[in-house]
Length: 61
Image 1 (cartoon, rainbow, N blue to C red):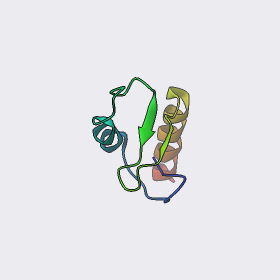
Image 2 (cartoon, one colour):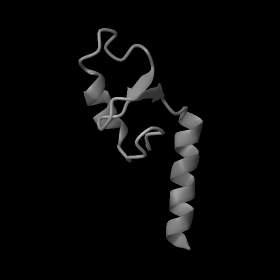
Image 3 (cartoon, rainbow, N blue to C red):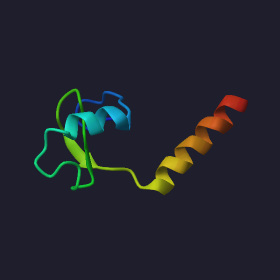
Image 4 (cartoon, rainbow, N blue to C red):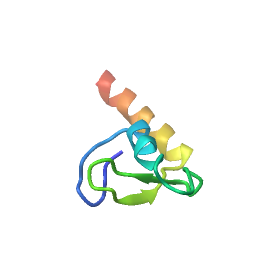
């Protein structure tokens, strides 16, 4: 994922670790940038699938 605020790239596992201190304990369905703390909605599964497909196709080319 890429943070819309600081533009750093991070993975969802790092975002989950940053959210462990939250009172809702991840129940809000947001991801938190481990670099700047900005919270954003998590990507839907369809977007994740499409990104993986594009990455595979660009590796073949």
